[in-house]
Length: 186
Image 1 (tube, rainbow, N blue to C red):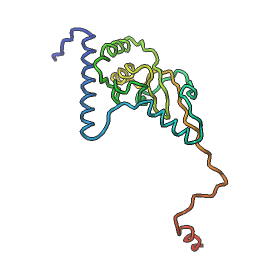
Image 2 (cartoon, rainbow, N blue to C red):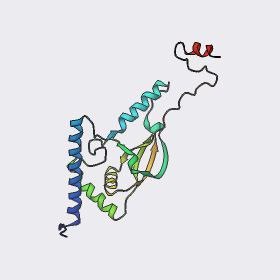
Image 3 (cartoon, rainbow, N blue to C red):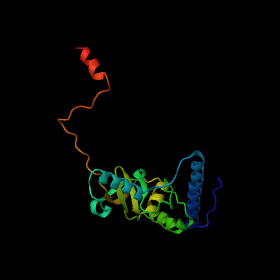
Image 4 (cartoon, one colour):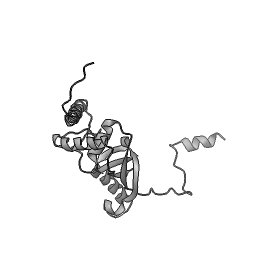
């Protein structure tokens, strides 16, 4: 078998990066043609949804820093990392790099994975998904090499408590005529 000769480990990593970037751009083009989107979810949009929900339930306006809860360092599934805090335009929804300027850092992180010297990423947890604040390149490389989990410092944004249903409340009204029909079938 003839294997390609690679001049250096770094050039091999650069080829991987360019291949991922090309695939991300190609997927983005294909998605646009069929009316879909490959954009990475943004934390700001999700935080706005939660704020709107909290205000509709009668809470005062709030800041994320005031309600977040630190859950400590834990291993989180890579496939549950769904978004970004401020870097939505740098990676696609599969954390493939979109911008050329990410290359050198991506290669450094790839080397760190090879040496198994990866510090924890920092994420916000909303519902079942995680939004990366720090560690976008680590997530990108982890997805590429097939890592199932990453160590992360997790901050959770709790959803507002749902209004409790009244135990003594009447059941939901039936469709018109339904209550009367059941009364005749005694």
